[in-house]
Image (cartoon, rainbow, N blue to C red; front, side, top):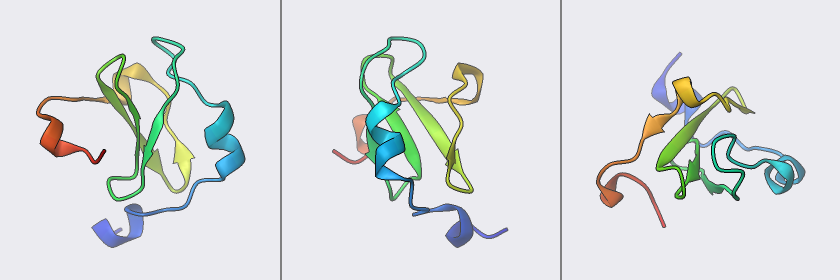
Length: 71
């Protein structure tokens, strides 16, 4: 699988409306370019693989420098 296959995968907008961060229970931001759901409150980025959000804190990337994600 190439990087192009995993980035920019569309996620159902209805799903995005109901998902919250499993750590903080706060709203998530969708970063289509990085194919991630961002929890600013927890400082985590949850990956989206094959259009499926992986909402496991152990699978999430820790946000560091704000330049790594889009606003």
